[in-house]
Length: 338
Image 1: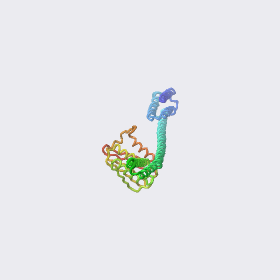
Image 2 (image 1 turned 180 degrees about the vertical axis):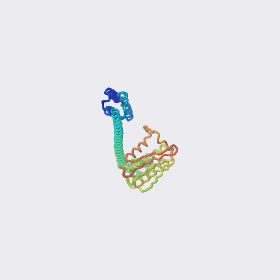
Image 3 (image 1 turned 90 degrees about the vertical axis):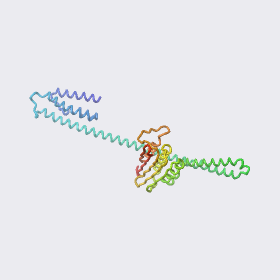
């Protein structure tokens, strides 16, 4: 619609220029289509129209001037030249304005996107904090209620066992032994669940000890030889950061156990005064990290979850892998970052 109006206005002004026999201010007359072209934000249209109007200016003059009356100093010709220069300056100003407007809009959009990312990061961090708080509460409940009840049950069963007569021990001793064994196994299972929910080592001693403890547990549970390497002294980090790095390590090693077919894994923690770098590497089958891995109902969420956890605390997560060359999950956290 705007282009049709621009065409109609330009044609009407050209006709007006022809009819009035060069009595109008051409710069003002032809400047209007240029201003309308500026509203379209199309630089190509602006300069095409500029060239067309420049040619039209002198074509109209050629039809208007009497034969034999043309000289370089002829008044109307000089005016047309000056008007063309004015049109060129107008087009140049409009071009600069278009660039400035586009740059301002791009900057505003970038600021808006960055604000959205910051808000998303704040929400993600809050969700992580809430999740960890719920894990902590649940672990405490398991310890205070289930764990203590199992301990009391074990004590009572041992008391009953000690009070049995030889005849009773023969009859129900085996049942009591089975019950005690079941209580012990259940207690161990509860402890494992509590450790998964919220390992006490993380709260009490920090990131390095909990990673060393977890790699040992991972080796025993999966058979994948997993070691922990530390470079540089690491002071205690904010709890939300320690939790995120620990959970990322959990998820990365879980992927090693599920998909990598690895024989060996190494967790490396490099600490400098400015940056903490956590690397989880394996010698497994690897994959193409550039491929589009869309999560399904029960597969493919691990990498996305790790990225979200890293972004929630202001860290950067990169994955380096190739088929047959293993995988490295690298997390960098800048100390003092917001």
